[in-house]
Length: 385
Image 1 (cartoon, helix red, strand yellow):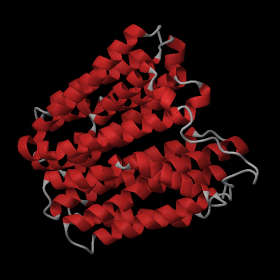
Image 2 (cartoon, one colour):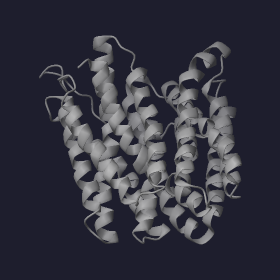
Image 3 (cartoon, helix red, strand yellow):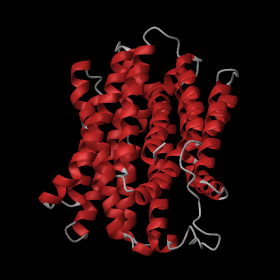
């Protein structure tokens, strides 16, 4: 199998799983009788621990000779833990099993990115091609599950994710045998090199916190949008289409924005501010419980609230962090945006949904406004970027 095809297949199966687990896990837990607060704790626990579990998994994966081996083992662990959720009962057991499954699944993407980047350099294909296959599969899986849930029980959510994980474990072993280390004498830089210096760099930390606050404001949407829309009377088919549409516009912006931005000479700060403003508007509007016709344009704002902010973050980190500290900068950003802050926001989202329903989106609008305020402050302090 060609290396680009193998990478595309791995990405497709990863996102076939996350395209179902991310929007529909809350529905499954709700069908088991859990409250919004309990669901929030289960979903948030792996995020809060990611600052620790991420480096631990990376160190473990580095111990194998081939990159594909860790991918296969992680997929098997995820399949076993997801499957076990269906045969046990109780909040405590589900908390532990979901922690294991979600941690294994979340680790698959950066490890696959590392493998694909090396294969792309070696074999001369564009990294964006197999990565784009994953995003497209996310949309397909999302919409398909929405259709299945119209007539099927919520258990189909976990059955799908288990199946995707098992297929991924098998497919990973078909990937080219790319070594983890090129030679036995290869030296590895310390993971935390420069971390202290970065944390004392005010412009850098302002940028990281601003982006992380805006990204964390998506927590209520990720955890409770499907539940809220179902209770509003929107069909599971349309829930899947709404999620799929948001990812489609996100991918379209990521693929189309960069060439246009270079031609126009637009830097990351305008994108960050635009994305933060879009998040404030999006969450405030969703708090009003708008009808289905208005949800489509609000979902289109995902291209700004997520994708534009993500692209701005990558560019700001590259500009504000010294090249020698690039790894530490990415670690710090990932720990805040994809770990601690969104984990805390997810924990808070559960009680907010229990007490206020979709009104909980207003808290997310406030969180995005804090990030937007920091972004505006940063823009005033920096030279035009």
